[in-house]
Length: 180
Image (cartoon, rainbow, N blue to C red; front, side):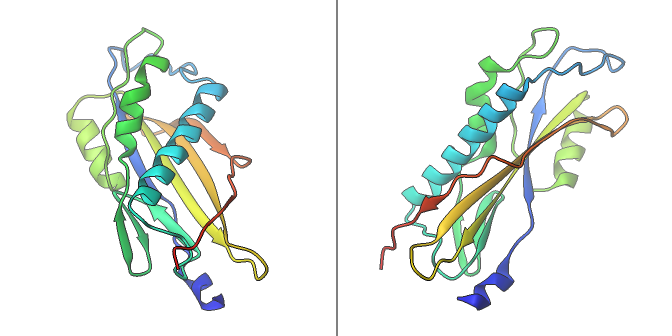
């Protein structure tokens, strides 16, 4: 079991684009509130968890961390994960820019791919969302799974990060039931 700690993986991001009619010179001006960011993070985790468990994937195969990309990668297991963009698109009625235009989601598997696409679309902002899950082994009980979520907004006109949200307290411990 201790050997599995060597398999901790880093965060990998899903990206969503935001389609607006704002001028590049307009400031972002806090289009998302803290509550809205927390809501996205919460549903992101729920969607991620439901997709993984529905496909029969459990986190007690020896890996202590899984990373959500287009797929969940845990040692030798690869399970198709729910798309971040699917959730974002379903929630866009809640999140609007300053001028009232809706944001539309699109998923990517790398920073380079997301930025290249966004720049060709003439977009002003890019929203990135990432999730990291870690499993904590416990000798006297089933493993605990914890989620760490981060959302950022990048100004594509100058590459600066105009909004960075990381919920250090957003962790969800779930006692897992082994299928074996």
